[in-house]
Structures are given as C-alpha cells and as structure tokens.
Length: 286
Image (cartoon, rainbow, N blue to C red; front, side, top):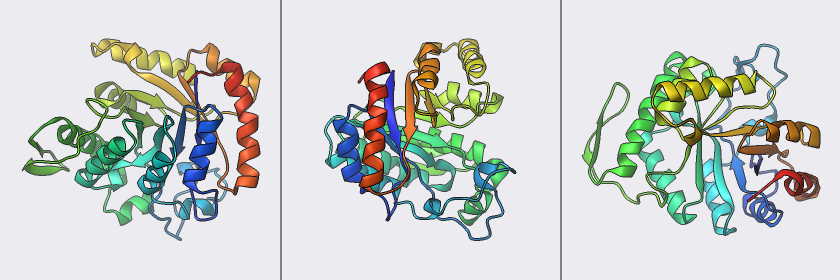
C-alpha cells in the first residue's frame, strides 16, 4: 500500500518545498495540497456542506495557490508524487487549467496526480459564476475538454459549458495520455458514473460512508460499462493514523492511504511525519 501526506499549505505553515523534502525523505509516496480560491465571509454553507459541521478553520482562507505550491515541491524533490487534493475544476477555466496540469507534469518529470472534486462551498462557487446544481455536469465537461487538449495535436470542443475552436496547446503532459485523474468525494450513482467514464481513481474520505460496499458497487459499475475494475485505483484520505485502522484499510486491498498533517510550522509537522513513518514501515511500499 502506498502512503501520502495531505496538508493545506498556507502563509503560516511550513513552506511547501521544505515539507516536500521532509515527506520524500521519510519514504512517503505522495504529497497532496488542497485548494480554495477564497472564502466568502457570509459563511452560508457549513463546512463540507454538513449541517452539523463545526466552524470552518481559518486556514481554508489562507491556502496558497495549489499549482504554485506544488511547483515549489516539484523542484525540491526527485521521486515524490505531487497530488492536487483536490482541484475545484468547476471553478477554473479549463483551457488554463489544462496548461497548468501539463506544465506541472513536465516540470516534475511526470510526477503529477490530478485529484479533482465537485466542491461544496456554494457561495465560493457563485463568485466564480458556477451554479451549484450544475457543478457535476460542468466538471465532467471541463475534464473531457482538457483531455482533448492533452491528447490532440489540434484540439477543439463544443459542449454546453465549454467551447473552443480548433487550437494548439503545449506542453503536452509527460504521462500519457495524461496524469492520473482521481475523483474525490462520496460515490453515489452519478459520481460512480463519472469515475468509470473519465477517471483513473477514486479517493473518498475514510469513515464517512460504507466505503467497502461502495468499492464493490464501483467495480460492478465498471464491469457493466465494459471497463476493467482493476484499472481504477482506490485511495482513501483522512483515516486515523494508527495500526488498527491502517490494517483494516490494507486488508480491504485499498491502493493508497493519505494521512493528514495540520498547516503548522516545522516544529509541529515534522514529529507527526516521524510518527506516520512507522506506518509506512509496517504497511507501505514506494
């Protein structure tokens, strides 16, 4: 099983390059950075869209630009996989995003893992002109459009949300046909359909749902669509970092576990990485 680390990189936390070096030195496979463009102060949407959620932590509004932070991590490391955990695709221009993804994959020599998600913050989306109920359809179309730009010498797209005339765009990603696309979030029927259609993996949050049952459902959906279920990599993020929980995850045949560290300074973060490293030694692989 592969092990990753996720942290919100902020102006008050350990620098992305330093964190990446320390994560790589301890044998972790990947480092993941989330994103939010901004947090409207109205705070009408509860954290994660859950009515019983606690107040949203301040670091959500302090997060560095995801691709800038990952580029810093890329040049400071040699083998560490670099994950967007996740990119809010519906809120981004797909033509620019396709170039950012491809550029980071080239700069990192093919180490990018492109984690994507639908998003939950309604007022954040509204400021980007995104209708909340349309976010899934918008994400799907933007990903399909980006795949055209990554794989075609001359790409074009004519959809409901994305349109561009025949165009050139370079660089193309190092990883072919493109970096792995990994969809985060709970998997209902619509999400499963998206994973099967255009994703290479699924990365839900551990403990929120009947994950093992959903994995079986996802594999069945892949088979119905004529896709090899083993072509979909399963990761989980946010489990409790103890041997019993990680052992349960490993026994389920899950491919990757991503452990969380708080966005704090090195004095706080590095001892946590040392503690997590014992799990890598017990269960992990590179």
